[in-house]
Length: 133
Length: 335
Image (cartoon, rainbow over all chains, first blue to last red; front, side, top):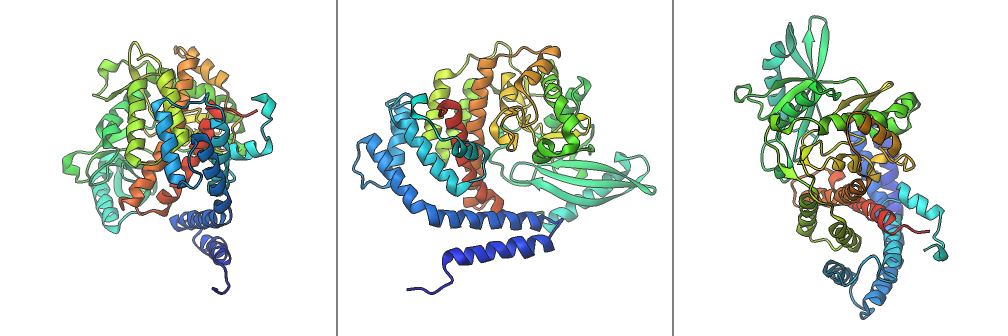
């Protein structure tokens, strides 16, 4: 068993260093901007560590159900198979369950990539009403 | 960030141009690389005249291979288009000098540096632009109509790209990246089945008319920048692109660049002689949203291949999911 600090603690410490020390010291130079981008990148990694395992399970289950595939199939392979079905016209916006699944998968991605993105924030604030569809 | 060798070469080249750019100019100074990547560099500098100084911008092609080059008009054509648009009443910076081989600066041109704000987020949010925001969408509509009305036979040779061709460009780029994105596939499918007919008469399209490429002051629109993607095509492309959510900087309730309404954009466009086709415009808004996602993939690709080393180019790869959620919101809105 590896010791503390945990990956999360280390990433948090480095992001804090970038925001609280490097950015003020570099204010007005391109480095301040690059430091902010770097801190944001570390935040993505932290969120991915926390959220990706459950999200990937949800994605795999949803795609396997849509494609009637073996639920043990690799998630990248399921995505390629779904893309092929859509590209061939076998599936479309009208396919039952398809856009619901893609909404869930996409919301899970945004929660890692860009949780402050305005479309994501708006969708979180107003969860869908099934009868409205 | 600029390599020192570039900095020295550009400074030396601008030094030789100082007297020609500003009467009495004796020195090019404060040469600073503003932005740029594989496709185009932008440098700010001043020419010292007596005790004062005149601010300029140099747009320059970087040395070496260019992935996006086939999409670009080229700096000489870009300079020509800016001047032609200015003559037709579009607010643009004055082009001062097109680089010649003897300038030893590569290919590019020098233009005046307009005074105003270009950062989209500030234009959308800052209180000092409140009055500007009331007129900006209408002004953008008028500027677009004047661009689209320029007589194309007087323009330099430009690539032609209508609704079908631009869709194919994005599809080819996405296929080249090899990423599996079901939401993009649904968007490509929708675009194929909603692709409008080719415009009866291809017009000059700016190609990147959006918040972020506008210079704005307290009174409104001061300049339209970044003409490198100009081409001949469907005028509704420009109207759709400025409404893409990525350019609203969080102010989604104002679809035109986060600062205005479609009604104001249309009113400005039609008052200046344009005709709006809302259905075509929606096609271009969907294609534009998808295009932003493909651009994110392209930047990540350039970073992964080592063409670009800026961390920003890697992180932008994680913004392709913004295009995915925006495409779902456009094509399969919930509730």
